[in-house]
Image (cartoon, rainbow, N blue to C red; front, side, top):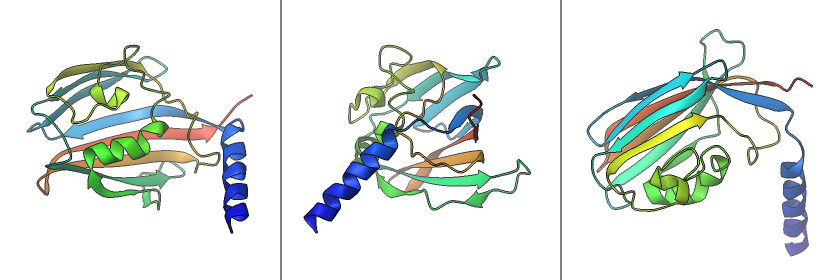
Length: 178
Protein backbone atom coordinates (compact mmCIF):
# COMPACT_ATOMS: atom_id res chain seq x y z
CA UNK A 1 0.00 0.00 0.00
CA UNK A 2 2.83 2.37 0.85
CA UNK A 3 4.42 1.81 -2.59
CA UNK A 4 1.16 2.76 -4.30
CA UNK A 5 0.95 5.94 -2.23
CA UNK A 6 4.54 6.92 -3.10
CA UNK A 7 3.89 6.15 -6.78
CA UNK A 8 0.78 8.39 -6.80
CA UNK A 9 2.73 11.24 -5.17
CA UNK A 10 5.47 10.94 -7.80
CA UNK A 11 2.90 11.03 -10.60
CA UNK A 12 1.22 14.08 -9.07
CA UNK A 13 4.57 15.88 -8.74
CA UNK A 14 5.41 15.05 -12.35
CA UNK A 15 2.05 16.32 -13.60
CA UNK A 16 2.39 19.57 -11.63
CA UNK A 17 5.78 20.18 -13.31
CA UNK A 18 4.32 19.99 -16.82
CA UNK A 19 3.63 23.22 -18.65
CA UNK A 20 0.07 24.42 -18.23
CA UNK A 21 -2.09 24.36 -21.35
CA UNK A 22 -4.09 27.40 -20.24
CA UNK A 23 -3.73 31.08 -19.41
CA UNK A 24 -5.63 32.92 -16.69
CA UNK A 25 -6.55 36.61 -16.64
CA UNK A 26 -8.48 38.63 -14.08
CA UNK A 27 -11.95 39.75 -15.21
CA UNK A 28 -13.53 41.31 -12.11
CA UNK A 29 -13.08 41.82 -8.37
CA UNK A 30 -15.98 42.69 -6.09
CA UNK A 31 -16.02 42.90 -2.33
CA UNK A 32 -18.67 43.67 0.24
CA UNK A 33 -18.58 44.28 3.95
CA UNK A 34 -16.52 46.90 5.71
CA UNK A 35 -16.92 46.02 9.38
CA UNK A 36 -13.57 44.15 9.60
CA UNK A 37 -12.20 43.61 6.07
CA UNK A 38 -12.30 46.65 3.81
CA UNK A 39 -11.02 45.74 0.33
CA UNK A 40 -10.68 48.41 -2.33
CA UNK A 41 -9.58 46.84 -5.61
CA UNK A 42 -9.55 47.68 -9.28
CA UNK A 43 -8.18 46.13 -12.44
CA UNK A 44 -5.94 48.33 -14.58
CA UNK A 45 -4.65 48.25 -18.13
CA UNK A 46 -5.04 45.81 -20.95
CA UNK A 47 -3.40 43.17 -18.76
CA UNK A 48 -6.12 43.70 -16.11
CA UNK A 49 -3.57 43.83 -13.27
CA UNK A 50 -5.04 43.87 -9.79
CA UNK A 51 -4.30 46.94 -7.67
CA UNK A 52 -5.74 48.13 -4.41
CA UNK A 53 -5.72 48.18 -0.66
CA UNK A 54 -6.88 46.09 2.27
CA UNK A 55 -7.78 47.66 5.60
CA UNK A 56 -8.04 45.22 8.49
CA UNK A 57 -9.87 47.00 11.27
CA UNK A 58 -8.86 44.45 13.90
CA UNK A 59 -6.47 41.54 14.32
CA UNK A 60 -7.76 38.52 12.42
CA UNK A 61 -6.93 35.11 13.85
CA UNK A 62 -8.37 31.67 14.33
CA UNK A 63 -10.13 32.50 17.60
CA UNK A 64 -13.06 34.39 15.99
CA UNK A 65 -12.59 34.30 12.20
CA UNK A 66 -13.31 31.64 9.61
CA UNK A 67 -13.46 31.58 5.84
CA UNK A 68 -14.93 29.38 3.18
CA UNK A 69 -14.62 29.34 -0.59
CA UNK A 70 -16.93 28.23 -3.36
CA UNK A 71 -16.03 28.11 -7.04
CA UNK A 72 -18.23 28.36 -10.11
CA UNK A 73 -17.70 27.98 -13.86
CA UNK A 74 -19.44 29.57 -16.83
CA UNK A 75 -17.97 27.84 -19.86
CA UNK A 76 -19.40 30.11 -22.55
CA UNK A 77 -19.72 33.50 -20.82
CA UNK A 78 -23.52 33.55 -20.72
CA UNK A 79 -23.70 34.35 -16.99
CA UNK A 80 -25.03 30.87 -16.16
CA UNK A 81 -22.55 29.79 -13.47
CA UNK A 82 -22.47 26.22 -12.20
CA UNK A 83 -21.11 25.29 -8.77
CA UNK A 84 -17.87 23.29 -8.95
CA UNK A 85 -16.69 20.67 -6.46
CA UNK A 86 -13.46 22.72 -6.05
CA UNK A 87 -14.55 24.35 -2.82
CA UNK A 88 -13.03 24.81 0.61
CA UNK A 89 -15.10 24.09 3.68
CA UNK A 90 -15.44 26.67 6.43
CA UNK A 91 -12.26 26.69 8.49
CA UNK A 92 -10.24 29.05 10.68
CA UNK A 93 -8.50 31.82 8.70
CA UNK A 94 -4.91 30.93 9.65
CA UNK A 95 -5.50 27.25 8.96
CA UNK A 96 -6.87 28.10 5.50
CA UNK A 97 -3.89 30.34 4.72
CA UNK A 98 -1.46 27.56 5.72
CA UNK A 99 -3.30 24.95 3.68
CA UNK A 100 -4.02 26.86 0.46
CA UNK A 101 -1.57 29.74 0.16
CA UNK A 102 0.60 27.72 -2.25
CA UNK A 103 -1.94 28.40 -5.03
CA UNK A 104 -1.50 32.17 -4.70
CA UNK A 105 2.16 32.39 -3.68
CA UNK A 106 3.47 32.91 -7.22
CA UNK A 107 1.07 35.83 -7.81
CA UNK A 108 1.52 37.70 -4.50
CA UNK A 109 5.09 38.25 -3.31
CA UNK A 110 5.63 39.95 0.04
CA UNK A 111 7.80 43.05 -0.39
CA UNK A 112 7.52 42.92 -4.19
CA UNK A 113 3.87 43.56 -5.04
CA UNK A 114 2.20 43.46 -1.61
CA UNK A 115 2.77 44.08 2.06
CA UNK A 116 -0.30 42.06 3.11
CA UNK A 117 0.66 39.86 6.07
CA UNK A 118 -0.92 36.70 4.66
CA UNK A 119 1.65 36.75 1.85
CA UNK A 120 4.35 35.80 4.36
CA UNK A 121 1.94 33.61 6.34
CA UNK A 122 1.83 35.83 9.41
CA UNK A 123 -1.02 34.87 11.67
CA UNK A 124 -2.97 36.29 13.33
CA UNK A 125 -3.19 38.97 10.65
CA UNK A 126 -2.45 42.30 12.38
CA UNK A 127 -4.83 45.20 11.88
CA UNK A 128 -3.60 47.90 9.52
CA UNK A 129 -3.57 49.22 5.96
CA UNK A 130 -1.99 47.04 3.26
CA UNK A 131 -1.51 47.34 -0.49
CA UNK A 132 -1.27 45.07 -3.51
CA UNK A 133 -0.13 46.24 -6.94
CA UNK A 134 0.31 44.86 -10.43
CA UNK A 135 -1.12 41.45 -9.54
CA UNK A 136 -1.38 38.99 -12.40
CA UNK A 137 -2.52 35.41 -12.00
CA UNK A 138 0.37 32.97 -12.13
CA UNK A 139 -0.67 29.34 -12.32
CA UNK A 140 2.63 27.74 -11.29
CA UNK A 141 1.05 25.62 -8.55
CA UNK A 142 -2.42 25.23 -10.02
CA UNK A 143 -3.65 21.84 -11.22
CA UNK A 144 -2.53 20.75 -14.68
CA UNK A 145 -6.10 20.62 -15.94
CA UNK A 146 -8.59 23.39 -15.20
CA UNK A 147 -12.05 23.97 -16.66
CA UNK A 148 -12.11 26.59 -19.42
CA UNK A 149 -14.34 29.63 -19.23
CA UNK A 150 -15.23 32.21 -16.60
CA UNK A 151 -14.08 30.89 -13.23
CA UNK A 152 -15.60 32.65 -10.22
CA UNK A 153 -14.34 32.27 -6.64
CA UNK A 154 -16.50 33.49 -3.76
CA UNK A 155 -14.71 33.78 -0.40
CA UNK A 156 -16.85 34.43 2.68
CA UNK A 157 -15.17 35.69 5.85
CA UNK A 158 -17.05 35.22 9.10
CA UNK A 159 -16.56 36.55 12.60
CA UNK A 160 -18.19 34.44 15.29
CA UNK A 161 -20.42 32.82 12.65
CA UNK A 162 -21.62 36.10 11.08
CA UNK A 163 -20.51 37.06 7.55
CA UNK A 164 -18.38 40.22 7.71
CA UNK A 165 -17.00 40.25 4.16
CA UNK A 166 -17.47 38.51 0.83
CA UNK A 167 -14.94 38.70 -1.99
CA UNK A 168 -15.87 37.60 -5.50
CA UNK A 169 -13.04 37.26 -8.02
CA UNK A 170 -13.71 36.20 -11.61
CA UNK A 171 -10.97 34.98 -13.94
CA UNK A 172 -11.05 33.87 -17.53
CA UNK A 173 -9.34 30.55 -18.13
CA UNK A 174 -8.56 30.04 -21.80
CA UNK A 175 -6.42 27.71 -23.88
CA UNK A 176 -2.83 28.94 -24.14
CA UNK A 177 -1.91 30.38 -27.49
CA UNK A 178 1.50 29.48 -28.80
